[in-house]
Length: 188
Image 1 (cartoon, rainbow, N blue to C red):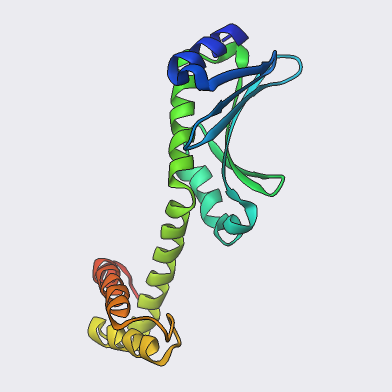
Image 2: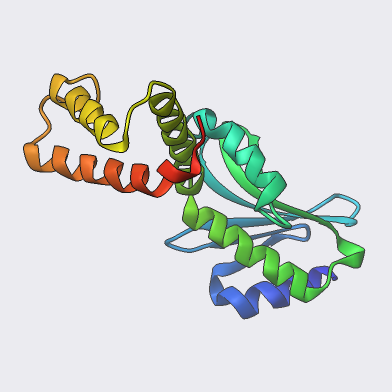
């Protein structure tokens, strides 16, 4: 792709929100996201970036984000720079074709839209699996594990004592769904 091809592809996809800032940079700014497209100084490499979250918010989920880099993000990657978690696509400009460029933009939009929710859900599932494993090692059934969690919520060890009964029931229902979904998959 050439710089003009990049301009055309971005204009076709984003219309007037695609702005060429200088010969080596473009910006797309919408109400939902901001994408930066940068060329290396020698115009041999292209980098596309989308900010996802402050690095501090992502810190507890780094293991899951790195695992996603290996397993799920395909041509894009998570990266930390200047206290921001970014979605990043890098490619040699000479061998980049428009369909790969467009796919990378779509993937980055998707990473931005997901934010930290996918990594957080993965984190929660790992913790729930650990709870199930410990419960099974202690000989607890699904029902007794749910009773223990309910007790923890009533005593304020989990959740918030100021939480309404309705809110607590919703949380416990979510626990039940997850425990039921994963119970048979976890071995002690």
